[in-house]
Figure (cartoon, one colour):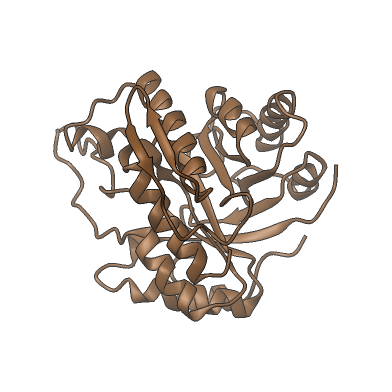
Length: 290
């Protein structure tokens, strides 16, 4: 199934140091160069704690600017480029605050926001006293997304759930986009829970072994993409948006065509080992052409 394929740029907010304005400038350049969207990671701790040399020493912390604050600045200097996260750990944020923040950004950007939603990483929970319990986090995420959707309607919301309670709450203004800001769900293949969640919302942002973020397992990227999207399309008649990383290590010359045939709508260029960083000249070169 072929259709329009948009090209996004994952801006490495973990490389901005003490100058997040670099990210804003990169997004402005990206819009002028023809990129369709910019996406920022959403972590509290970067890099994640790691064992170095067999010890328990953690890697030195690096600055990690907040993606939504940066994207608000980007919105004020751009007109067309889409703005999203890669991805926001929804259970880590209060849903009413996230609803207000994103509705405000959608108003500022005149309807350009995409919410990449997921469970997040273990350190961003446990280091702040929050349990790393994936089934519980999944239920919390589902409940929070339901609340977001209802709050974005502009109608009064009363909700008494497992994790959240609201009593006659109306949040205004509404987002510009109707019926809501698109919600695309991230997760790690071959786990399928996020595919079911994405099928209930507006699409998926999957990672799979060997995609440039996760270690490879010897399977060709094209095969992983085929398997995960076949599984996903079996869950929904309307797959919505499908966002994958561009040019994973080991992919062949037909990778883009495979993605298009399977209904991928976005290919995202991100920093891999030895690839581009916050280099404006590279961004000015524009998105890859099939």
